[in-house]
Image 1 (cartoon, helix red, strand yellow):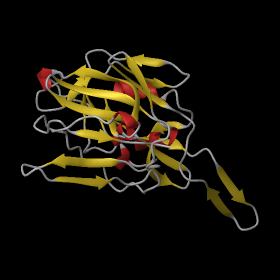
Image 2: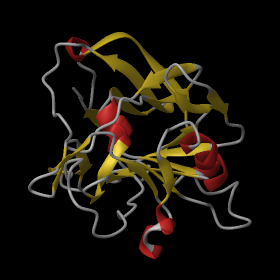
Image 3: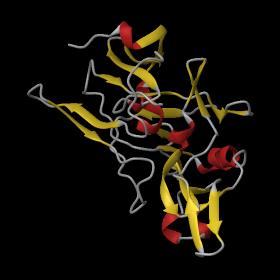
Length: 245
């Protein structure tokens, strides 16, 4: 079961061995997080669960504080709503006010910031639209990276990061059962785009049936925290392909 389609990616697949201390998950080391043309935050002893059932990206609050500090207009969501305590908000860069009609017009949530993640010594860049997880208000957007702090004493046995489709739709991803590893490759430029949508919750059940759910667009309103459904190691040979404009 499974295989790869070389017509969808370019270069070689970069396979990263699983962290067997987190044997319930497709979990691999995450080495760095940063901003394209900016500084990279080196990360040590970090294990990231590669999870097709999660929309956004969760990580330690101490690292995300450094990350969002590089993004103009970003601030903790708790400053405007206690329900956004685990999120960051980014001020929308393009607002126009009509002086006669007293109306404010805003473009769809957007940013020109490209986040980067480093796995297996290779850095992968996210499309700017994927840094936006939703709309908070006319002038504010939800950042795609949210605070995900492991409980004390569980850092060595549980993933410290959860990597969802906000990142995965930017790469060609292979889940390899033997030897257990996750592989990434750069998508070819001419791959049809999903725009601001991605695949989430793709799974194979015990009967071999598949199912998939299309996640909400980056312009959807934020109503509640995304459910984290960590991908189990029992799903073997699964391929996920994502694309972004």
